[in-house]
Length: 341
Ligand code: ADP
Ligand code: MG
Image 1 (tube, helix red, strand yellow):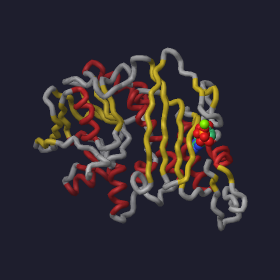
Image 2 (cartoon, helix red, strand yellow; image 1 turned 90 degrees about the vertical axis):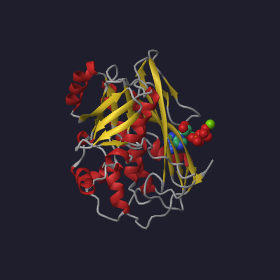
Image 3 (cartoon, protein in one colour; image 1 turned 135 degrees about the horizontal axis):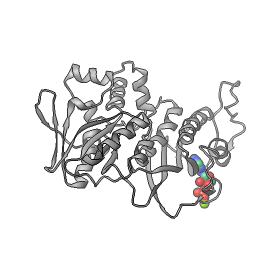
Image 4 (cartoon, protein in one colour; image 1 turned 60 degrees about the vertical axis):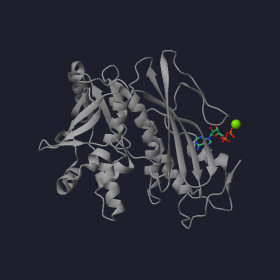
């Protein structure tokens, strides 16, 4: 069992910092920051503190499970504020649950810390806890180790038996929709890499994505297929096309863009931001023609922008039509961590 000493703070006024002469154990650290994150759910029979958590899964529901890791220098910059890291570490998993139409319930957290700092942990826990509370999630366990900063979150959700949205149900003639706007996080990343100031709304889209959980749940029984956009629209839609053995056509003029991304596309003539930059955490959904009105009324009810961008076709491949009518063949290669090997 690792003993973790919190580093001494020069700021003696902050009661969040702990003096190095009074190191806290791994268990004190867990108790202090992670014991009560999110809501207290009645279906948690046993939460943090034993060898396993014990959970009640209702008989008529399926358990939906997804896990994601965020590594410093790969998924976030070393100077990213810890509250945003805590938020995003949970948000990416909730976005996977949204794409399955599952209702979030529980999360586990494996945290590797090189230099545990009380104010860092407090802010991380706040970001994680706020989003967990907003979505009715309870943190029910985890693991805490010393090592390069890395955060792994497993999320668990519930979806009525037979009602999960999958990637494989798209059929020719279905309409393709996306929620929100595309390419904002990608533009924030490009500006950061170029050392240019990032407008706050774009920074928020990169650091604190809002998973489309309510939309995913309401699309149960309506959408034929769904995926969340983590690696770019073309690549992620490509997974739907491959799973169903179909193709698609997109009208690029229909892509929902924020003013910043619209300007970047207009100025450069380069559509890669909305088509292939990652970290959007919007939903891409296929809707059969008979369900279009119901789908659109749900988006109005929820106040979530939901835009038709194209159609599923029987012929394989992904094509985009420019406003001029020119046809572009689009690569469905999304971001690949191992592409250079
Ligand atoms: P074990 O040795 O049985 O793996 P640990 O000593 O790692 O258990 O953890 C003790 C308890 O604290 C367990 O209930 C575990 O799930 C929980 N826990 C450990 N780290 C975290 C964390 N970062 N967040 C939430 N719960 C944690
Ligand atoms: Mg154990």
